[in-house]
Length: 289
Image (cartoon, rainbow, N blue to C red; front, side, top):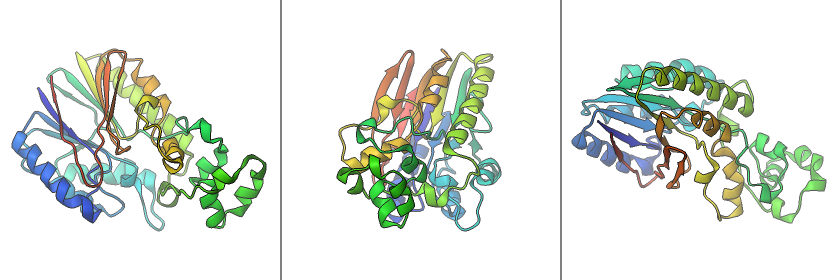
């Protein structure tokens, strides 16, 4: 069995389009039993999302995806949870794809599980010493001060220093993702949904491949980077997702997107790959089973 995997096409971003189109053409030429896109196919505008999926019309096998955080962006009064549960699955189905978050698949005795995953700040870099409130606001202290959130800065002034105030990072999910619940609550909900998938697939499959947009293990998080990237590490994933995966010995491979940084770890029986596609460079990985 051959499974093709890619991630982070970001087809709504002009500088990503040519490389996404090239990747899709390669995938269609290569062929396989299944193709899975691991998040951030596009952004708030559904038009580019649909266009990106149509690039794979020539692929003859099962076509599946999980959304990314950018796929949940909603402008104005949009509802990201409704987008996740209703709008994205409907659009995917119209273009011949299944959304693994809601429709795990079985193919030749192999289970395909999927989740957008999310973040609960468990990957926050403790060496920075930034209070949790700034992660929840998705603003570094310097950005909070610059953008007029001075009440937040004042409330934690005793814990802040010049290094903190020099960091001007704004995680844009804070502007465009509207879940109606906290990130921690959403992560917990997704973790339990993933657990349910894996329990069901374990009963009927010989092995399972899991696809998550966000990172499930801290070992995949880029290290030794500038402070602005260290702050952003809090939004790359959640250890809770990895804890769920580790409970199921039939999970042999895990593919992730999101970080734009290629890395690989072996966790028990699992080969876990962060694919590392960027806005310019797209990776197409082939899993032969």
